[in-house]
Image (tube, rainbow, N blue to C red):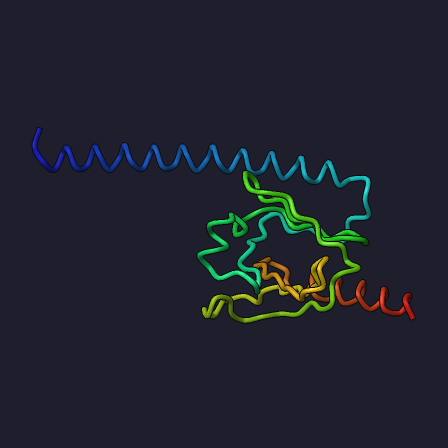
Length: 159
């Protein structure tokens, strides 16, 4: 065989292997998302983003976030009592709405401008420290609107 034939065959094998891996991971992820929604079916679900990308926590630099595995794609679910994030093969994370202090839109994360607005949720840690988390979701404006309603309703109920 000549060199060009070997290169073409190698490239074809690589593409097929990559496509097979992508399809396998995607199927598994969709199945895991369906399991998350089944677990939350008894709660009052107000908003769902199945492909939310957790970008950053304010207290972590990019390297620390990657090392801890806190960045990644997963299901972001808003109920009347909490924000629930489930990243396949990483972790589940629940943020009670009673700790949320602010929800707003951002245009950048990690110093990079984004094409779509990002969802930033500020909250208070159990030890009293302020913290915030940023997600990229397709419907960030809707998330902010619903969170503001819920946070405002909690503030009204506390007074």
